[in-house]
Amino acid sequence: MRDEWRAEQEAAGRDAQEHWRHTRSLVDVAIGWQHRGDGIEVVLPAVRFRGTVEEVAPDLLALRTESGRVDVHLAGAAVPTVRVVAPASAGGHRTGQATGGFRAALLAREGRAVVLGTAVDPEPWRGMLAVGRDHVVVQTGDAPPAYVPVAALTYVASAEASPGRPGT
Image 1 (cartoon, helix red, strand yellow):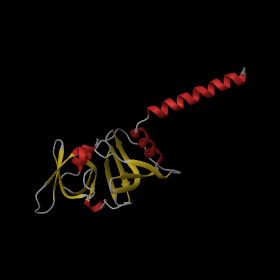
Image 2 (tube, rainbow, N blue to C red):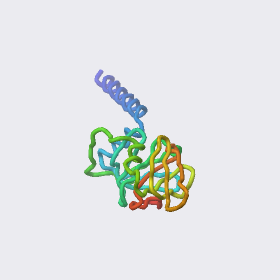
Image 3 (tube, helix red, strand yellow):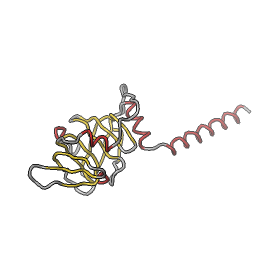
Image 4 (spheres, one colour):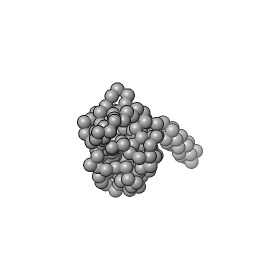
């Protein structure tokens, strides 16, 4: 009887774990990485970023890299693949409610020099950022401005952070 009860409990535990795994979103997984302090690698077209998770929202994965913060668009035309490259042995942090999403990250950088990645161009866009309702404007020197739909953006970072190189 005891063996039968133990088998039933183990089966119920496996079922619960499978249900939990099937209902988790990428945001849920990223919150776990943030809480543990895992080092992750984010792979987008033509670029990779390594760092720790700083903020998570339904459409945002903010990383703290060696060269600064990179805001990755989770709901854009080219979504990233992510893997843990340095499991944490200690550290991590918990935050309250996310301060916003990807658009809020864009607005926080408005009027500043940025680097933008897009789903359609392997080269990053560099220039001053202005944010519209569904697009951004990138102004580089005296050149005509570039208009990029927010849905096409893959990441944004400050120009000083100089992302856009593999392995940043």
